[in-house]
Length: 611
Image (tube, rainbow, N blue to C red; front, side, top):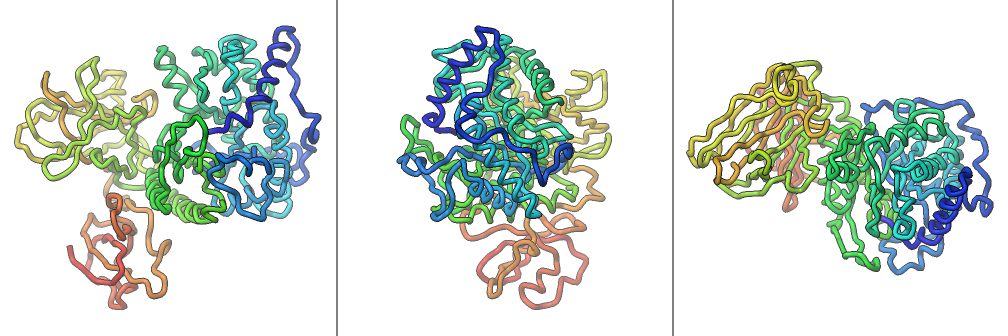
């Protein structure tokens, strides 16, 4: 994620000062501020006292990580995998460089720039904010609406320090937590309040992992985060809105602890693919750390942008309200989507196209959502898989791929966990239908446990069981539909994120059963099918560009968009369409009979084929 060499020396000096001041009982001052400009002057375009509430937590939001530590010396580093475009500013102290980054984010459709902050020790970290604020100020004066500024507090501030100064990482002590809170607060004391990114009126903070790249781990307890809130509320005058990286929970579970903040996010999408956590979905274009010393040499090839396009499609379709772009401009690990010498503005443009679709689809409710457990594809239904084993084991059987769940040693059962995203979630308590595909082999049974409203059911209704489905040994793929009456769906499963789960109950000594696609339908009579993000009005044929139409009947719908096919292996790209698109393709009459919505597949020629 980071280049430690850019921070180690300044942070070591910071640490010495911290320990000295803590030992003396004095208040810790800011470090190394005299070397550059003074604290940012009062805003002109963003007047004092004007502090907009910002979006609500349930609103759509696009955020990205802004690395602002670069200067001319960065270009001399042989580990720099990507490079800035030639002839442009490239210096954390230059407001023109920051202005270009914010202007490009605005063009792409980004709402919040999460400044990757390393505390007020390094000169670039604290004084780079002055240039960033000046750049945003100038854009506001010119009439533009640049992204607001949120804090991404990078715990690698502590890298290479905890071995020598372990007390610094003890957040269970008043001294350790005071220092931690003080470093977070220093960001907001440098950035005028009217530039802050806010959620429900509260300043937005993303906390990275509690561990560092050199193996250090911050020590914490259940009361640590609430004590952090209290300290920050005193410093900032209001309670912040904190989003923690999910690794905090991994460490907490190992100690049987429970943590609470407003939300969580997952880091690593640029390398691993889309990651879902809380109300967030993270996506990145690729990753490459092979030029960095002492790194394992991980790489995820960009594949000409095809992988990024597939990942964007998946997160846009998921219905989550917050999209995290990982990252805007990290060059050493080659995760940038902003303009670079190697890729120009291609990834910026691709991002803009899908964010436009994201905004459009945000106005629609959907009728169906599904997860294909074998292919690991999701569509408007969240598959909760924080641990890799929760995805199960892929198995090819009966002519297709399914997945066996991981068996929990505590009860001998296997589980797949799910949540309904906002666009699929029903209004109030209604019945929903869940269709589960399974390979009917052997014996045993499976059932669903869902978050219902029967207070007498397990977990006060959080794990309401359905009747079990007993396997009959037909050695064929079958489907069972569960009707969940009065499904409250208050996300009381999976640590506060899950709505229902498959509980697989294999016979003792036998492997778990194999499952295929899980489909959820809510109020099917009044919702259009929106299973694909593109229609031809968004990605239409250019002059001389023809399409082969594969007409595929689906349930009648009032609007466009049908099904998302598996990842393409060739030239085909799935699109959605209305029946009038036949006329656009061949110049013939529109489909005149009362027909369902159809599916369109892009090809190099225009041929009508009934399927």
